[in-house]
Length: 477
Image (cartoon, rainbow, N blue to C red; front, side, top):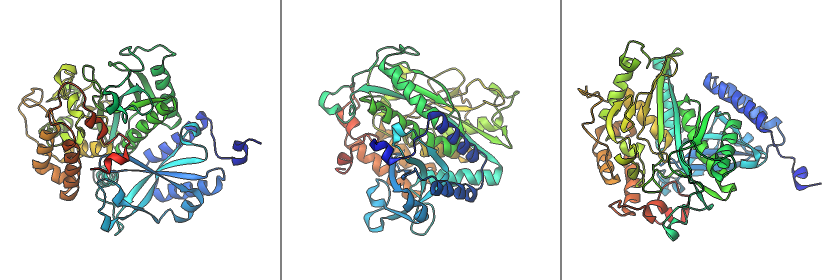
């Protein structure tokens, strides 16, 4: 007998995985009551003897993904009392008040391919709970979920999002962590937009990542190399805002896993190489009520409703206030460079890709607003919360010309940080405590890097980037 036969852990075909994940996704979209899903999941975990562990995922304040593996038998008995040390998570609790709990969001349940995540495992997103049993204020996923649910209950709104997440693939499995040794990244492909041969490493990486995403219920749409060498984009269907943010976290995790297994690095630095296009995370949003897209109006300007234009107005009004939430790193401000279709103009346009907001061609089903200024390294839950809450609840400037660029987004993190700190709106958005924590984290990162960006990417802006997995360096802050 081989070791695998002795272990007898769950391994499913990609087709079986897709069926299971799409069924779970349909339950989530259909808002099946949580107690019903919880009962079903616990029964499944109890009955399926080949599952050994449940991987619970949550994100810190900067959007860094954390994972804990719980033994399946332990979790089935203790799922409602899972504690962890919050003081070890940047942006969470101080040491003196470190105990936090994880609750299972049973609707956010995924079966992952065993060749990527390991045999005998399933994944579920967790919600961070404070000592008093309330959602933890720095767990932005929980804040977003509460906000989205309140809008559904009060107004019947469903918040929808689809994200176009660009990234790079570089030679070497630790390219970011070793950047300080060479001061450069090595491309795996020097083709271009839509161009890669079937057998080259970039195409192989894209194909492999797309297969995993399809198996996990992403409902893929298209994938292709992007404009810059070794750059990629894998598009998939829209989802409700919390599910969409979960998928962003899984997308980046999948890409990193696949690249690592190929001896490569998937990087979501917004501008890892000066002189070529950076990577964005264009965030397409819409709102439906009773199944109807309320951004659509066939008689409106650009066939968008007055409601949608007010949504755009509010985001543009607060564009500088929330810039730090959408562009969360020192490196992100290299991307807001007007020489490379940079979306740094605070205006809306149907055609100009230099606009912070684009109005894509749409119909009754697809009418949407595209926020183009988002970096791929931003906390996706903060992005969703910032865009939707600002678009719905922010101030309307009644700008005379939403299409005229009278203002620009900042070109460095210090200006973005000052705007964020000074804005009353960001206090409303996050609360004083979480706003201060987030500002402190960004100030610490900025202070570790040269104040002037200059003409080449500096080692500290890579080494101290919040998405580069180097716990040793973070602990030296």
